[in-house]
Length: 81
Image (tube, rainbow, N blue to C red; front, side, top):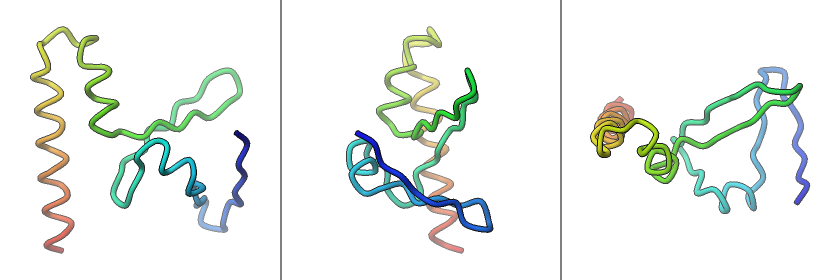
């Protein structure tokens, strides 16, 4: 699948709808930018992402739970603002 977008003067891009749907990206989803081999890799920081890397941390998922709780608190603060 090849999709394109245009960078605005503010450096913003629109992630195409099909890609957002495939990776469960919605309003408020944080995105991780990784650089490697002359490429920019975007990774959505969704609950699926944290569950996937939980085994790497070797703490039985406690870190994932803490990160998800922190994200929920951030969303509440944003909603109240």
